[in-house]
Image (cartoon, rainbow, N blue to C red; front, side, top):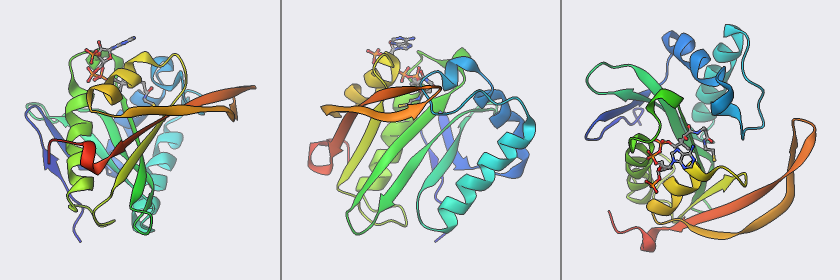
Length: 185
Ligand SMILES: CC(C)(COP(=O)(O)OP(=O)(O)OC[C@H]1O[C@@H](n2cnc3c(N)ncnc32)[C@H](O)[C@@H]1OP(=O)(O)O)[C@@H](O)C(=O)NCCC(=O)NCCS
């Protein structure tokens, strides 16, 4: 199956490739972007090259997919989004996304993620038709929660001290969206 690419009103979701390393470095070297991540801000371009390789390997191994989010009018890469830990057997996956701060608050991520969910629930991806998409957020990440709630995700609980990074434990809020609850198929 060819790598699936999508258009939305203002965005293009495309394959990431090696020439995106600079843009990916810009994204993940921003403290605001990684504030809630188990990831220190990148300090070297080689880290961007490495994460691009990780995304590619995950896709080849059928463990997930990551798209570049590009502005339709300029082709600029402004963020990424994708599915991790996808399980055709369980018909579920975990969603993730990040956007350059200068583009926050304009509805871009809601627009991109909506298209990814539609693809996952309608069988457009090589993992087959999924039934559940999960998202984990760190308490305080209100922008991410807004994106999820607007798309119909329900808060399902708190996994206490579920993660450890940046020298401390982190609770994780668990959000889930079930196919039958998504009314945009
Ligand atoms: C989460 C993120 C992708 C949101 O992208 P975005 O394009 O700004 O999202 P949208 O514009 O589609 O929606 C943002 C919502 O959050 C709100 N919001 C934006 N910035 C906010 C902030 N700093 N604090 C609280 N709410 C905020 C907006 O008002 C909007 O809410 P609404 O639906 O009630 O109007 C972006 O903030 C980001 O990249 N954060 C860093 C990476 C990250 O944390 N990813 C998620 C990990 S779970």
